[in-house]
Length: 155
Image 1 (cartoon, rainbow, N blue to C red):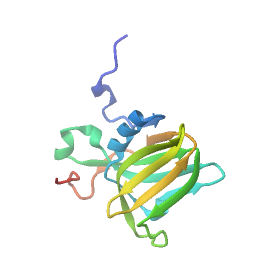
Image 2: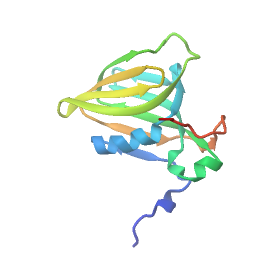
Image 3: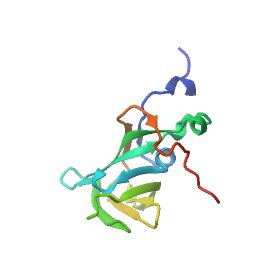
C-alpha cells in the first residue's frame, strides 16, 4: 500500500468536509471566486441547513489553470444552522450574481459560532451555527470558464 499522491486526485470531483477552522480554510480557498445567482442559495430552516449551488473555479488545478481555466458546479452545504442574515444582497433580484470571496468561522460559545461568507461588492451572509459542519461537493464535470480567464486579485 502506498500513500495517496496529489496526482491521484486529478479530474476527480471534490467531496470534502470541515469540522474545524483548519479544514474550513481549505474549503474557503477552494470556493474563492465561486459565483452563484441569488436563487441558488437556500435555507431549509426545518433541516437547519443552508446550501449554495456555486460555479466554483478549480483552483486545485495549479499551473494548468492559467492555460485552461475551468469551473465546476458544486454544493456548499452548512449544517446545524440556527439563523441566517445577509447584507448587500437584493434577494428579490433573481438575476443578481454573487461572487464568494471567503468563508470564515468566529466561535461564540464553542462549538457554536458564526460562519461569515464574504462576497464581492460589500455583500455578506452570516450563519449562526451550533457547530461547524461544512461540506463541499462537486456535482458536475468541469467546464471551460466562460470568461476564459483565471480570477485575479490585484494587491
